[in-house]
Length: 146
Image 1: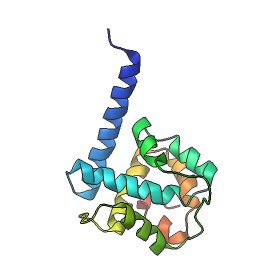
Image 2: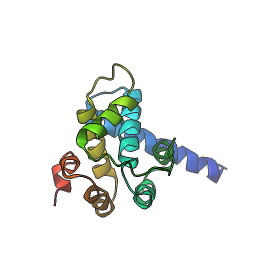
Image 3: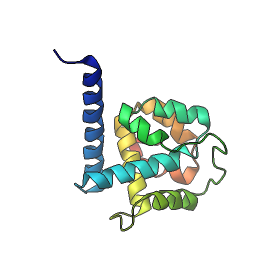
Image 4: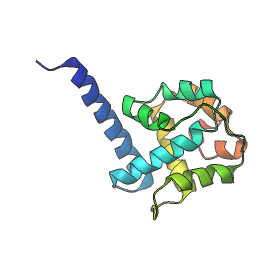
């Protein structure tokens, strides 16, 4: 008989691997570590620019392990960050990517936004998009535009 607690963890690992595989497809890169790095970098840049209650609402939609990646290193103080320009967002993503990452910060961001649009509830995701500066809204898939 299998332990139900371990089944939950097994499912969480499966969900995370599926997200990474799907993101790898959007990045046109089969290297799972690249998908992980991209997901982490963009989620952190997005998280740090949202009001705390929106951070929590977005995080609640993520699979268990992705939620842990999202909240890793998050500190409530000083959030959301006041910089609202796209270059500071891209700089944040680039700082979190490993050296010699095979994609630029903009392409990486667009791929992760595409994954989020595909995997999360569109109504809840639209609420997050509405909080972003107009130029960042344009980086989401065209289906997200209203």
